[in-house]
Every structure is written in structure tokens, then in C-alpha cells.
Image (tube, rainbow, N blue to C red; front, side, top):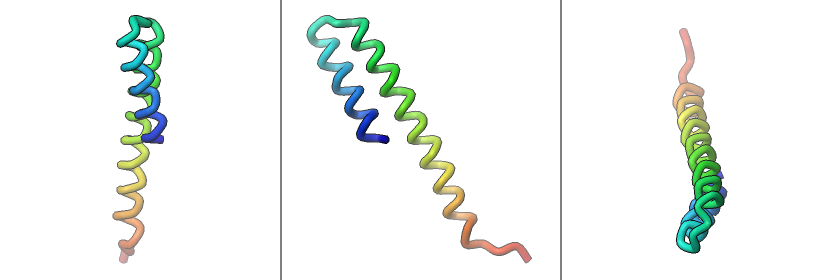
Length: 57
């Protein structure tokens, strides 16, 4: 998922260089959403992994 965010970021930068501002803005928005989704899922799975080993007595 992080690779897709990086991919859309690169597309955004290249489109911005060539003056395609609409495409650049769209690709940047997609990259931002995918990156935040990656961060949220990373934190959720990290918390699951931390609490999975603990037992409740």
C-alpha cells in the first residue's frame, strides 16, 4: 500500500512539472488518502500485536 502511495506521489510530481495541475492535484489527493490509510492500518495492527500476547487474569 505504501508503494501505491509513492507511485501516485511520483505521478503527481511529474504531472506538476509538465503543468498538468488537475492531474497533479488528483494524484496527490489519492496518494495522501492511501498514505493515511496505511498509517492507520499500521497502528491498528501494531496495537493488536502488542496486546495479543497478554492474558487477562
